[in-house]
Length: 356
Ligand SMILES: NC(=O)c1ccc[n+]([C@@H]2O[C@H](COP(=O)([O-])OP(=O)(O)OC[C@H]3O[C@@H](n4cnc5c(N)ncnc54)[C@H](O)[C@@H]3O)[C@@H](O)[C@H]2O)c1
Image (cartoon, rainbow, N blue to C red; front, side, top):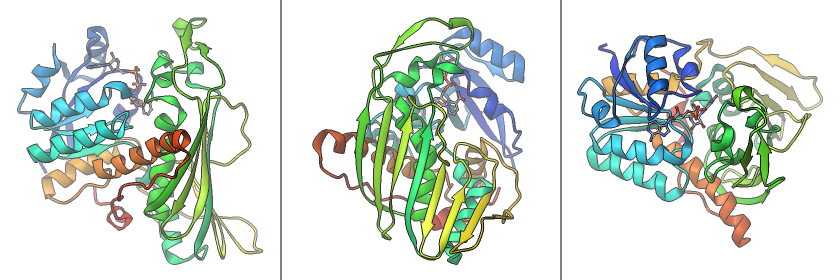
């Protein structure tokens, strides 16, 4: 298979994670960052060329997919430009910072006949696929409930430029919710209704990481967001996301069924196994059903293979749009007091087998 050419827009902190695994299905052609030093550094470090403008990158016929690694507030504008230039686009999460932005990206891609892919891709990890197989096999009976917890003190403790996570379209639910919600949709199917509540713990934060330690940044979006979800198959539960919580004792994701309970690995990671407890039996580790060892970037690589073979890809824009719609639904319902009915999610059946 001829590798699919990828052009990267945005060469910040997350880039190194995409560079950690080499996938034969794709070849990085070039990169652009509005900060020329960052683009140059990436080019020196990883050996692809840097170009002086996004237009230049989009005009290159060797670039087939644009990998959008910019901050959330510009995801949609960068993805729209890529789609309008006739490029497939794979965006970091979220797809946009509002339902309207996400819908515009999908529409532009549809108009030009190009694909949209979007992180997270951790629902394709060995652990998550194993959890899905166990639920399908009835290992915990009929799923009845779930809990999902992402409780941390804040990204200013490790990220060199943390303000993007405290701007509208940031906050713990927009930033981290996609991992948990994508996993939940993978495991439990179509959401029927969502409700949400939000809190802001403080109006500003002090940067604690590296060079900018001591600087103050404003908090412009809630930093503690809770959602309640009812799935069409009947399961209900809560997702709590926070940048204002220290030392949480809560496990990341648990699914409760009529016959037992499944402890699912952290959806923000690719490692970690599944544990199962059936009725009055003790917890046991479940050996993974697959052992691909894939990491971040698998969704992009899988999209590259899907493009060449003409089949649908798994980490799709439609799935990301459903997740974005749920997230905005939490905020809408917090404001209105009325439940939100999410848009249709792609059938999880599509995501069960992984061919890369
Ligand atoms: N940092 C992580 O560990 C991590 C992990 C998972 C996902 N993500 C996601 O990846 C995305 C990027 O995060 P990051 O941590 O790398 O942020 P960052 O701020 O470190 O990097 C973003 C880069 O995009 C560039 N940029 C901004 N607007 C641009 C534009 N219009 N055109 C070209 N370049 C532009 C900035 O100059 C910067 O170099 C976010 O959506 C984030 O949620 C980050």
